[in-house]
Image (cartoon, rainbow, N blue to C red; front, side, top):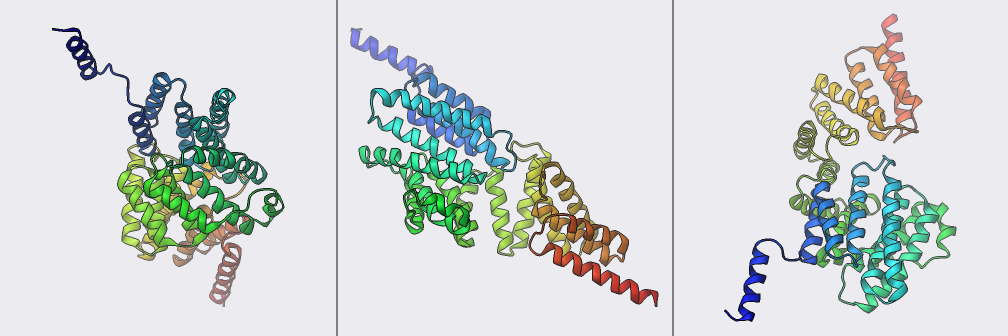
Amino acid sequence: MNIVKKISLILFLLQISGYSKPDYDSLVKAGINQIYSIKFTEAEKTFLTLQKEYPKHPAGKFFFAMIDWWRIILSEENEEQDERFYEKIEETVDFCDEILDKDPNNVDALFFKGGAIGFRGRLRVMRESWFGAADDGREALPLVELAHKLDPDNVDVKLGFGIYNYLAAVIPEKYPIVKPVMMFFPTGNKELGLKQLKEAASVGKYSKYEAKYILVTFFYYFENDTSSAALYTKQLVQLFPDNPVFERWQGRLAARKAEWETVNKIFRSVLSKADKNQEGYNTPMVRREANYYIGNILRTKEELTEAFSYYKKCIEESKKIDEDKASGFRINATLYSGNIMETWRKYDEAKKYYNAVLKMREFNNSHTLAETYLDRIKNLEQKGSK
């Protein structure tokens, strides 16, 4: 056997034995799928392998931080994991800076540094830290623009462009306090932002799932476009059926469209997964929402005993995570529990619930409704005493 054949045979044997170097693209895609499938332990192993096999590439550190980003998304109201995420973002930025010091036009370093700063900005938007978020957007944008100029075929940059363009146009209108800050930053363009996000969602290599998720939230919170939000949610649930964020969004959107059988099916599935302690599901935030919607469905069916039981669970789960202010779920569940007690003519109990609502923050006329119901009970009691 000549030397060429021997080398070919050795390489082939190494490959089928699993000793060949893992392919960069395959590792990244596998890790991304693991993140959205809420298999964080597997994703950590994948991206640690990526760091080991490609030690000079920033992707390993960036996507390792994205695992913590999705841990935060699973429980947005819990800020305990914020600091760890910020530290990993800082590590990614420092890693990219070391590369850029030697090669200012390194596309990968520019792209992942811009992306890291952009995600830090997204968390600051979530925490309503407006100046920090705007400053991150200002810093990230030129990095991503230069990366795009150097590599025009990279569609993933459209995620960053789209988020900035959209939020820079929408946030100052929704939160006027931000307007003076935004005077010093590039002007946004809502329509362009949506177009860029749709392109990333359609043909992005690594960004398409995040772009779809972002579009769901933008269409729901800012555009009041339930149909478009539901379209992208459906795609995400089909791809990642055990992602509690996507599944809950599907239920939430079905509720907005009054598709009650679908709502019931989805949130009972969510609770079933929580009972099985499936990753990402067995949390107070997830249980609170699922119990609330199932309670609403049972109340409309006048199955009041069961409805009251689910509202009680919703309130209990809310108390575990409500800090400075009560959630809308807790306020409504308390108000509806009072309605049920009133229907049962347990007026003293009903008054306790209505008074509890008055001690909480105002939410969708909750104080006005509670006061109206208290007056109604007072009138009924006065009539009954005559």
